[in-house]
Structure formats: structure tokens, C-alpha cells
Length: 294
Image 1: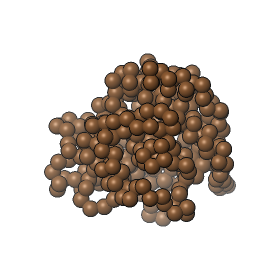
Image 2: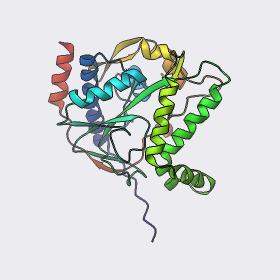
Image 3: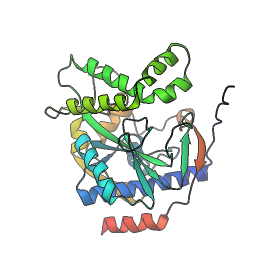
Image 4: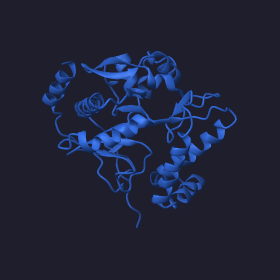
């Protein structure tokens, strides 16, 4: 008997705003840990765009993204074991969480549920989250870049294969099934070796998220490292967070004309099938914000 397909849950405006405030709690916690432990990070993606264009979350956005150069990501992972407020949050990545199928980490809010559509069978807690992306080297020699990009593509599809095999059909489904047959421990052992090898030489001019696609087209196989090294601060929902000093260059590279609002039909939100929210702890957000300013 075929398992019925999950139904999409559509968030109300009030639910979406509360979701964003829960993510703001986590951004404040990330910032607190990074300031205490001298870890560099930057708002990236739509979160950086929201900071610049809206002074906070993009009104229709349902997630938050933070990026770290690989060494700072590893420092943050370690810091979470001793510094994280575990009464409210928990950290996940494939080294901490059995059955986890992503190449990057997530900070999640306890006592919540935020299940993306077609991810209902993941064998771990799925609370409201902020994505934490390690940023890695890209080969300096241009002729190697396409091969490096292909390896990254295979790792991306392999980590996603548990979900991809349920969403596709035909040859795509066959490909995902082949990749899903790789034992999980072997897959992540190979990914760890690739990460170590990839970052064993000198720092490259360009960098990327290994298990995410590159933006745009042409021969640019990554983002400029300097964007992640030279940082400034920006107002976001009334708080100060770290962002690239040259955010104009980064956002133009990633989005083009980033200050122009997209058509309403293109204001995309991730489909979800399960939702449980708690009220954001506004007092805790305020308290940590005041500590940050002090």
C-alpha cells in the first residue's frame, strides 16, 4: 500500500512573523557565542539581502543563513558543546546527528517543529532552524575547477538522495537510489576526506559551500574569499550582526539588481508539512541585545 503524500501547510502571516522571531533568537545566540569565542561569521544569502534591503528579514522569507570560513565553522561547532544555551537550542550536523542528510549545520529551537515538505521521514528532531554554512576552498587552477565542481555536485546529490528519491521519477530517481545505496558512514567519511584535502593547501582566492550549487553562470567557480574575511556590522531587526564589508559586491554577484523587489509570483517560500511554534522569548532577545550593545 502506497504511503499517502504529505500535505503542504501554509503559514499565516502571524505564524511567519513568529517563525522569524524564533530565528532572530538563534541569530542573537550565534552572535553571542561568536563574540565571546572570537569566531568570524557573516549573514549570507537572503538574510544578508534582507538586512540591506529591509533592515531585517525579507517579509516573506522563512529561513536564516549564516556563513563561516571552514576554520571558523569548526571553532563554532566546538564552542556549541560548551557555550550554547541548551535550555532553548540544539546544534545538528552529520557528525553530531545520526541520519542527518546535509553537508552544513543547523542551529534549532527546542520545543518547536518545522518540517519541510518531503522530509517527514528524517530520523531526527526538526525544530525551527538557522542554517550554518562552512565555506571552503576552490581550486586556483581554472582547468581543475569543473572537476572540483562535479565532485561537489555528487556530494550534494548523495547527501540529498534520501529526499530526492521520493521527489523524482525515471532516471533521476534511479540516480538518487544509486547514491542512497552508499552507506551513510562511508559517504560522510569520504566527504570529510574531501574537505580536509580541499583545505590542506594555501587559502584560495575563491570559496564556496561544497554541498550547494554555485550562483549564476560563466567561469566564476566560487565567491571571493575577501567577502568572508573583511567584515562589518549591520542593523537587522534592531540588532547588530556581522556582514561582509563589501556586501554590495557579494549581493550583486549573487542576485544581480538586488534592491529591486521581485514580482509577487516570484516571492518564494519553502513548502512545509508540519509546524509547531512557541512564542519567541522577546525578553531574552532584548536582554542579549542590550548585552551586545553594552
